[in-house]
Image 1 (cartoon, rainbow, N blue to C red):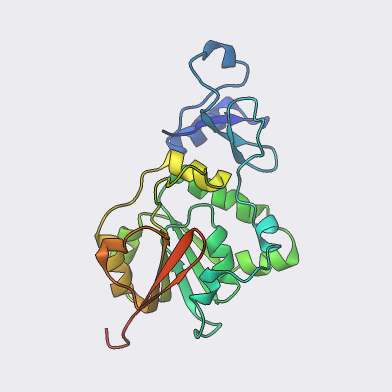
Image 2: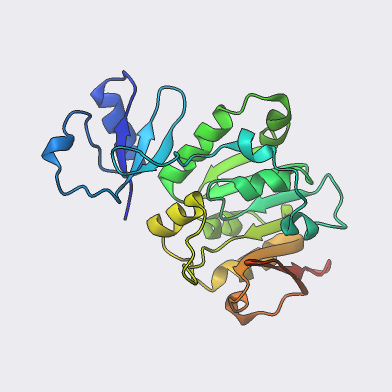
Length: 250
């Protein structure tokens, strides 16, 4: 399933149609909703706003919009297990977030590194990341997002072209719903709108690419990615981080 693009701007229909084409999305022209009775309330929409763009469920948008809100996320100062995975690395280390999603983990990684490359293969998600960076204006948030380099690509292609150019590679291959509780809205949206990445070569490529560590985010009950045992794991209530220490000889 893909979101449908709608626009709240005064831009010409041609500009919006061009954007829909670039993002690979269907476009719904405002005012023509009545002609689309099959669009159910559980349909996701990518709303191009005058200032910010966001995802919403249903045309009415009754729930809180889903967006890359780096300003809000930066206010969360709680020490996380992801940052514990970075312990012992120098503050000038470089990170590649190979599965960027909405960029929340990348923002966290930017607090303990010098640079973060965000790779996102889904065009509309890449667009929301760009929008989130553009709308980050507070000084502290800018100090973090200024470390970002945003690339629209499949991580495999990126790893194949570049070699050993980052200290750390972070992987978050989407895991499916487990249990009865639904995830936070942005994570649930990713699960609803994308497929789980089950390919076996991503971890292998990451291990060949990283100079020091590969960090993999898993559900606490999931098996190791590609059944490859990590150097160590840090487990939380729902999520487990598997850390692979890369030997300096490769």
